[in-house]
Length: 160
Image (tube, helix red, strand yellow):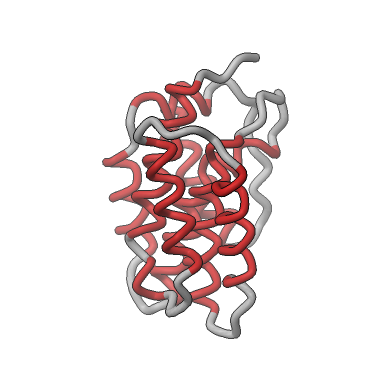
């Protein structure tokens, strides 16, 4: 399977937009840096070590006792990591596609908001490339948790 840079840029831009919506829930600046790095790649910048480093730093920021902030930071990790989606025909890759929107919806819910509204927003903003990219992969394996339910909603709608 082949993934084009245009597809990865579209996915990464959408993922960054999803993660940015819950960024105010994270007091740590590292997730914001990961989103900025993702947006730079999405707008035509190169995939660099700085992008990976920003993702790892955002992951470190997710180690917080605040569940909403942790989920928001994981959304930022996913946004920066989207640029590195692997062209492997594996269900595991699907969570890298839906993960930023899924984590953003969970963060919103944990902060007292509506996960459904966040999922609806994410779906309304997804460029066509995200759905076509997702359809290259076998169905994901989301599990039976709340996070898994959000994954199922996003994947089903994006697969169309």
